[in-house]
Length: 185
Image (cartoon, rainbow, N blue to C red; front, side, top):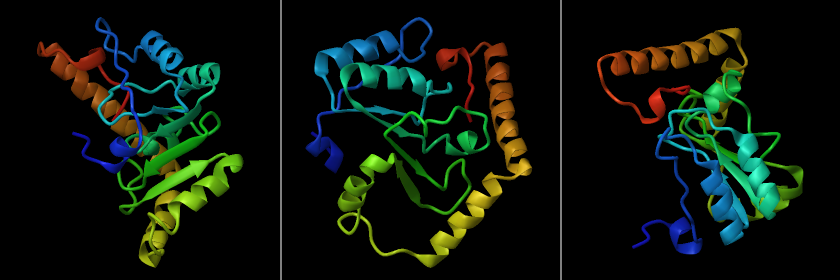
């Protein structure tokens, strides 16, 4: 049973990680893309502990003539701090929240290439988006200003350093972690 609207409207095909290293399996992703000829490839993860190589997704999307959407909700702050690679120059569409690693108000963003702007605007407002909330807009402005600061970059690096220390400590205690560690938050 498909529980959400996107699952009812679209046919999503999942991809996974390789069994040995538990890293994104780009051979499988490319094979699935060739077999299914998707119009859109979605990259992004809420539980993947490694940095996502957006360039590999872009190569596959280009090969099969698909658009690329990157959902960076969980690691947008690390992109803003310059710690993770940015999908912006590669992806047709990039979505994110502002309240996770960006430390802003609960909200979201859709960024896209200029050629897709009219399509996005037509499909988002007024159908799925209401009127603007000025306190949220003000909160986003503060969030974005903070994300450009040296202190924010140091904070982002500390987040990753702490996550790596935790991962190393857990592995030293004998626990097995997916992918053998983390580059993430």
